[in-house]
Length: 414
Image: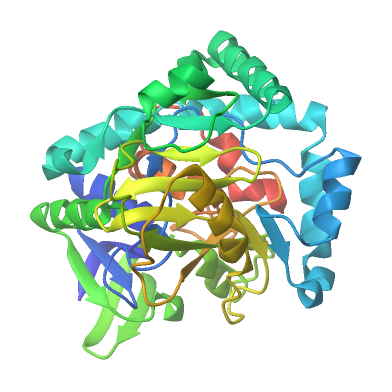
């Protein structure tokens, strides 16, 4: 099989890249070992986070670091035997999170995430997926006044600096906005710009169908087997060989399986996370996405039930699941919302691919012709998939990119 472009990985990023290339006249083959959207893109929180201008930084406060070191928190858990291997990544992550470095990272990140709604909107309309989207924003709720005041100050700063709109609610205002909540809260930030997704997997499937309508081809195979060829790139599958002039590595947490073999030592780590679905409360259903700030977990009323998503687990990518955080978060969640029974036979686990400078890797491979990278989006893969797809496709076909792409180039790590 011959193609112009071979896109490796069929999560939200890979599917978005494939769509944008197909829209620009490329013949595209999309490859994954599973059907599209069945790995990391399957289990996310279902947020298109226009407000997420500040990527998740390493904590700098001594109290927080001490608390995390005890390994008892809801929002972070680590495997002790993984720390020696993770130490270089964590050190670079810590350095990048210092105020001066972090401000520059936010400045570079803001233009990309600022386009997240617009780029999703274009694909949602083209795919006819409007029924999967809710445009009511989401709520960041606070149990204590001190945390609330810090949250309000951050929201005001994002409004001034980046035009992110929000409404600041006291406890009574939050209770009126979401009657399903059982606690008397100190207040909440209603982030008004973001959109939420009733079923993230279904949205990726809708985008995939759009890709097929544009003439794209999907092949189920191990995308990590790609290799250089005389004419570009080759992938051998059980159904034959795919030959393409150019290849895109969009394999998320598995990207380093390819990049290391090709000689690139990119500082990619994984942040594992879990979810579980619960039945809606019998009396008053939850209608909005709610993040409980101090314990730090999220409740999302989705098509399959209320999805509880956890924070970060630092562990080897392929280590057996250890859903400790889910067990820690559930009592807090049941205190906030009278959840029904668990609906899944076991917790779902996924891996977020992360870089130490918190910016995704998007752009040309420095030492290989016609090889491109698109991975490392950490917590914002679903948010940034379409924006990444457009940015990379514009570079690949020689168009002027809609934002300056250099901040995301893989060469920054080499």
